Image (cartoon, rainbow, N blue to C red):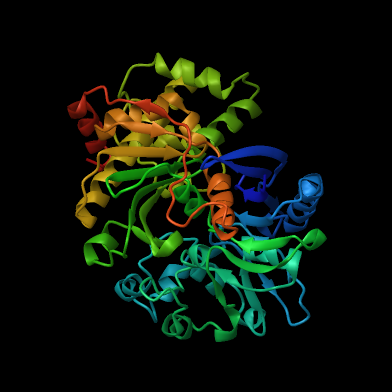
Amino acid sequence: MPSFVAVDLGASSGRVMLGRVVDGAVDLTEVRRFATGPRDRPGGGLRWDVDEMYEEILAGLRQTAAAGPVSIGIDSWAVDYGLIGPDGKLEGDVRCYRDSRTDGMAERLRETVDDETLYRVTGLQYLPFNTIYQLLAEPLDRLVDKTMLLLPDLLGYRLTGETGAEVTNASTTALLDATTRQWSAELVERAGLPASLLPPLRQPGERIGAGPEGTPVLSVASHDTASAVAAVPASGDDFGYISCGTWSLVGLELPAPVLTESARRANFTNEAGIDGTVRFLRNTMGLWLLSESLRVWRERGLDVTLDGMLRAAAREPAFTSIVDPDDPAFLPPGDMPARIARACRETGQPVPETPPAVTRTILESLAVAHAASLRTATRLADRELDVVHVVGGGSRNELLCRFTADACGLPVLAGPVEASALGNVFVQARAAGVLAAGSPLSAPFARYEPGGGQRAWHSAAQRVGLG
């Protein structure tokens, strides 16, 4: 039975997974798991330890060697990159998107590229850490004679020696034309960036080169959300999706981008998917709010677990307080419970005083944001939905899935959990001919029916302008 290796990197942990396709379903085995979180270097900002990631990946690949895998694919989060010099070496560190160095870069870009033009070309949601803003934060002389490689392509380069940019991840840079799916020479020039900075583009399923033991390394849908959406067990066009983890990526799969002024004002993004599709979605802060809160409580000596907090939160009163998860105050690491308390005070709502109350506030707020984004997406794309698929780690959060079904007024199908790794293997298996092109991926899921109370959810959303 042919096997495939998926290297799936998240912002807190990475996994090396071995996947086999059985009757249209992918059977995944976790071979190695390791920490990936950013590190704050005094005077140097938040950085990723790419060398450590690479060594962990190599260790995982050695553990899979006995299976004789057909190929290897790498996916990760978007926007972050490394710079390869003329000598072929990585110059400096790979900075984390949560680093503050991009402060003021959007205003700088507006001196030569207005927001309307940027969206008309790229279709990309404004996020202060998009790659174009990170590059503008670099000294220009550091970019000259360099090649920019996004994280999966950088690690692929370390394995094969071949440079390139996979298109689903390239579409998050604000340098790719959303219509042609080519680098925008106009934007590169107007942003004052060297044209030689951008490597040739690749498509999901293309061969990059030979990795360890001569195993082919393939270009998969290397943006982890693109892989996760590829793993959604759905067909047709009547579904919405939420790729739920540190971030919640909420939207639709479309045949073409939506580049209207209304879509720009709603801050929706058009990112490339597999087979020429578009991921029309909005980024919401996601379970980052809860994971940071848990970290802070533990540092204060509280004996808290995720499961315990979810059980306790289910017993808390409904709709006591709601916050907007996309408040910029929630983006950097720090005291999340204090920030949530401040947001509640500023909007005239009761302040959640206990960890279970804070947890309930976070989960209800996320469900409100999920529903608001899906309502806006369907209006902008002129679509109607019958169901919402929740994939990724958040699909295990029963309380959040139930709240999301209630807030949306639609059934929620939760799963698969390892969606990014599944989508990674899915693209490799199609490239190998193990799965036929166009065949959907089957995966188990749990179903949550809406419990009503739409008026109460809508009222809660209006408190923070999400109604």
